[in-house]
Image (cartoon, helix red, strand yellow):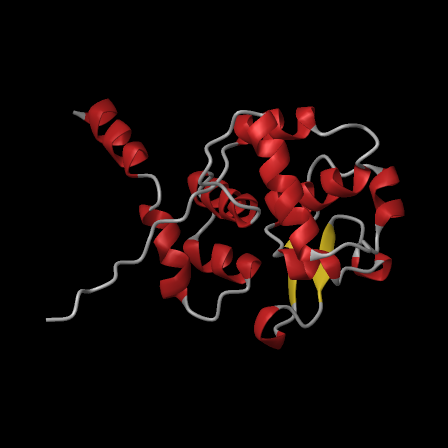
Length: 169
């Protein structure tokens, strides 16, 4: 009988972990700070960050043109976006560069080893759900074609459900 391969729950950074990560990035590496912020603060995929142009960044939102699956969407601009950050757009690096830098800086910040660059995007999704944004709106922000894909985030932190239960009973 074939073994059923279960779907792993997404591993997303929490806000305090993201703060630790950003603090270890040297000031001269502005590009990584901006890329990490876009993934964590707006839910962008690394490919979307690399395709971002200045004209996509508006007053309080970012337009993603032809994201994964050739889907256009609008995402919030990160709350801690600063004027100088616009200067590093467009980013002329590779996805692999950011994956390596993420691993390097996450080790320096003493974050769990199973985190990847995509864990920044997972962190955005998990925070959105924790803050009470309706799941269908989180689906739109992430650019998921199916609500079932987004629903995995509702199960990602079982400890939160246990804590909620303990608080109520």
